[in-house]
Amino acid sequence: MVDTKVDLCGIALQNPVIPASGTFGFGAEMAEYYDLNVLGAISVKGTTLHPRFGNPTPRIAECENGMLNSVGLQNPGAEHVVKEELPSLRRRFSQPILGNICGFSIDEYRECCRLIAPHVDLIELNISCPNVHNGGMAFGTTCDGAAAVVKAVREVCDRPLLVKLSPNVTDIVSIAKACEDAGADGLTLINTLLGMRIDIRRRQPIMANKMGGFSGPAVFPVALRMVYQASHACHIPVVGCGGVQSAENVVEMMMAGATAVEVGSENLRNPEACKKIVEELPEVMNKLNINKLQDIIGIIE
Amino acid sequence: MPTFSVRENFPVAADVWRMTLVGATPALAPGSFVEVALPNCYLRRPFSVCASEKNSFTIIYKVVGKGTEIMTHFAEGQDVDVITGLGNGFDESRVRRKALLVGGGLGVAPLYQLALNLRSRGVKCVFVGGFNSEKDIFLRNEFETICDEARYTTMDGSFGHQGLVTELISDVDYDYFYSCGPLPMLKALSKVALTSGQLSLEARMGCGYGVCMGCSIETAQGPQRVCKEGPVFDKEVLLW
Image 1 (cartoon, chains in turn orange, cyan):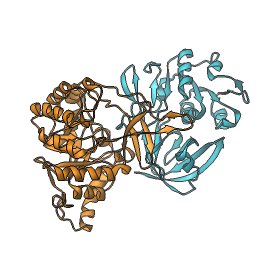
Image 2 (tube, helix red, strand yellow; image 1 turned 90 degrees about the vertical axis):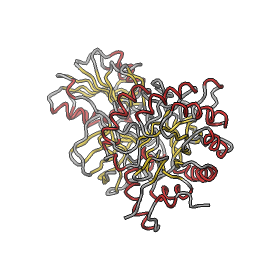
Image 3 (tube, chains in turn yellow, purple; image 1 turned 45 degrees about the horizontal axis):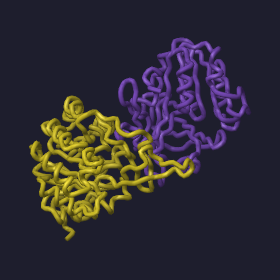
Image 4 (cartoon, helix red, strand yellow; image 1 turned 90 degrees about the horizontal axis):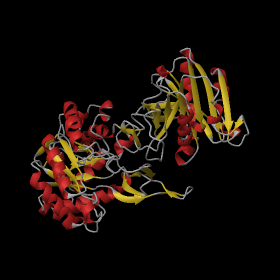
């Protein structure tokens, strides 16, 4: 019997497989396909303080081995999430929940965290949002911007605090270190890469918002590289995310330095993707002579 | 995900194909849709159910890009991964005695099973189909057989009335309407229709089962997902 358990910031996960925020809603739709309790944890839909409709449609474009999205953080707002979505998820899911929070100002991040944190097991801070008080520059693209929001949220967050990093930066290691120094308990990387597609017949961008986040198997090597760099530069756990579609990918992410692994876009083409990966994991471990998954974290020097 | 097998796959109009798949499924509701996985395409493709009975369903698709081009090469007996039973479907109980069915282009497809079901409930159906040209028309014999009346409009006048579907409904006697087609047609129809009705929307989707929020629209009842709360919406709920 292989051991798939991992410890993420002091929270025990029965396995490292976590559906990534924004690809799993609050679990209700996916529960129509399988019992969610096979998962290691769930990262719920990114939540802002107030309800958001998000960006105009079309919001989705397909690519070779991946996709773009410009959903724009559509969500029902923190109050509704606390009152309806999280209690409903708790009723059907007894494993840890990551509350994914977003904001457009430091005050909004703090208030959102204050509302969500008591109802989840970990907070995952999405710092890829534009700062409306700083010309729309995303918090997560500078060390100072990232550190400021992490520090402010840290003060009001009594849960383990993961910071989800944007890959759209010059030096991921300096941002990762800035977040660690500002009090992060762990890091999730990567968020989507900024991309674009054009409908050459209509001579128009495919998405109404022109640009959007690129995800899917095509980004896996980029995510893996950043997980490797950040996990070796920092002393806090890293959650790997980006293009994961198999149990082999999970193992590869963990060898690069990930303590747990999020599965994103794959949930959008196969509602049972995470279940399948969880089920295949022991078999893949056996094949690779891995007894304890925790032992392979960061074995690549 | 469930595997179905291609029973037939053939062209029925210009760049329009009809595919029937067989496999374990209950009869699928008219207005509901399926998501087909395609080789070498990252995302599935959504198609409305044109006809369905226990253990089989038929879709009509137009060849518009890489994905649908691949589908034309699906051979009889080939296995296809399909998620079925998505979306809400038409509410057949809304109509009392006489239904108006208005389809535009590919939007005609989901009205076929609806017409079959309504007829078996004893509802009289008048079908109005709008196409660009005669070469785009499909299921003509079928609608003429199962509906009490079938009317056609084409933009170029090559078949039926030349013009828009809305120009052909003023003398129809109906107590409820059902429609599917391009957004401008649905919008125009909602304005001229004298009764309440249901409209099936098309949208670019990511997943098709409600988790990606790719196909959301603003409605009188707040944000709704075309794939989950829809694709069929009441006329009064849509904000034009």
